[in-house]
Length: 230
Image 1: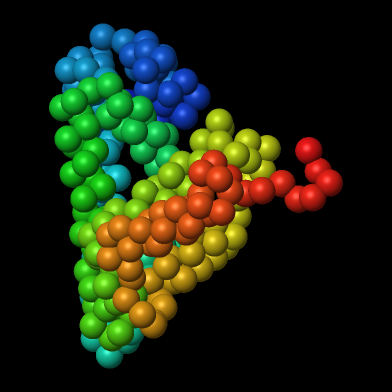
Image 2: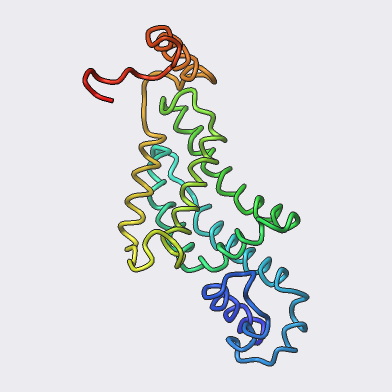
């Protein structure tokens, strides 16, 4: 089917050239179709990317929005969710990278990218609130925490799969990627103790320490050099 061939060809070209440098002629060559056939199915590269991104989002929803055992801890299902997200992202990283690139310069597409991210943020925020109901991470803003963690997950997946990432010569194994992401998320959520400090609490203490240090060092606000050193 031509439409499917175009979508498959686009993923290959986006993986090599990125979205902005990708040419419709190259996409159609990768699809083994004539360039003119592109406009029978899509009005533009942007429309093609939107369709690919929607398919990506549908895959994630089907995999992650699954029934949860009400008797399990809210943290128990994070591992399998992270594992599925990583595997789906790895298969679709050219689409995610292209969408991220286009969202930086296209205001309309940026709204679609936010909608894509909102699904993950909402789902993780629900997990955090359920965990808070069991005494974990008290006082943490669930939505902000979910946004921060989703950003970490998404950028890590991008960074570990893109050719311009931190490990261009290394194949990041599934089990390594999942273990690192899952451990960091569980450490960020699965703690008990005092509530997180309210806004400004930590910085206020630091400012107080800085003021006391200023008084001791003559107002410079810098640590004194050790005796005998320049």
